[in-house]
Image (tube, rainbow, N blue to C red):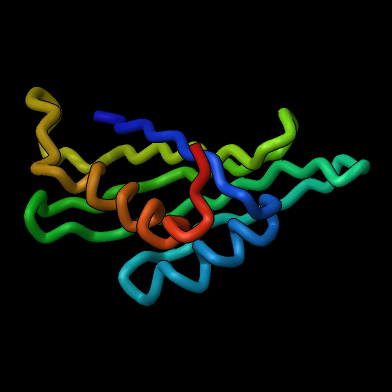
Length: 112
């Protein structure tokens, strides 16, 4: 089951990604990172994390995409793999918890 969340922030993608990396702590493992500078101040970056959740007994992954291609920096959070069953896609809130940890990190920079 994948949970998807979107938020806008008032910092550039590179700054948002640095804040996320600093704020994630030791509970999540950074699996992949890339930042592409498209020129004219436009950027798109990706972070991929993995974290173990005791309550679901499973590893969960989260893909974070940050871009400012439309002017404002948009952050997309996609958590997946947090269900421990092939039939019942119940993650006991692990996906939402994973994504909300990023939202908390960026809360001081979030805009409507």
